[in-house]
Image (cartoon, rainbow, N blue to C red):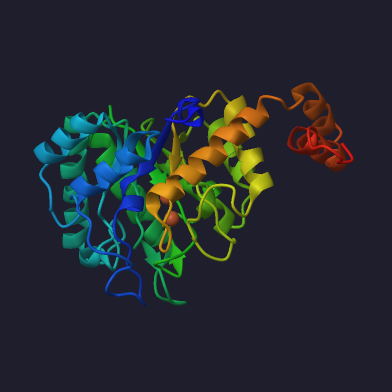
Length: 335
Ligand code: FE
Ligand code: FE
């Protein structure tokens, strides 16, 4: 195994090793992959220590015991469980579904998934209410959606106080307007929920997509003690492209990593990607290579000079410090 893989710890969403579908390739971008196979593929990357697993395990193609066995064989840990509250049954929403029956069904799905999370020793439950929100003007009363979301999450988090629940926000897709759309709104709802075991999962790409500075959004969540985990990827800001880390927004990724490093981030660096046309193992390795290089590079940044540049809000002095670590050793460069 090459040395870069051992420099730090990495985790991933298991879906990046599964099969991708969209509204065009309705036959999938590749053959069907079972949860068991996906875990084995993740293990073949070489640097992934833990996984975020969807539950039920993709159309129930594996039992918890089978998943536990393959995790044991591969030495991979369960990082998180993501209950599937965004599939067909919940197309009109999970917590905010207009049907009280389906709202309580979503709570049941999460409760069952939480039991599995305890069984597998997961660090947290990831809540992605992908179908909660609205599509059309006039469709929904925003205050009612707020009430239902706060109430629903309160219910699940209250019933398992020892388990952290991380809400992943995203501005849109599949809804044109998702309820948990950005960091500030999610933190405000968390304040209303009023429980210690609820926090944020900040997906770097979702934050870009939401028009945020991911570093500033992370800092806001950190300042309130609510940052449970992060997802790393990249996109062109107009869509959740889920590309390899640092491929588009190199400098903002550097800033994001610096923010977390300085806050003493000690969790594995988590990948969330959709390599539609790339080999997922290569895509994961590309991100791991990029991340370990960036993290090492950041060890060299002059933090005192950066603090001084920031105190005077000197944009070009701050940029120069990044340029120094990036190009300082480039022969023949102006640095
Ligand atoms: Fe994500
Ligand atoms: Fe996403």
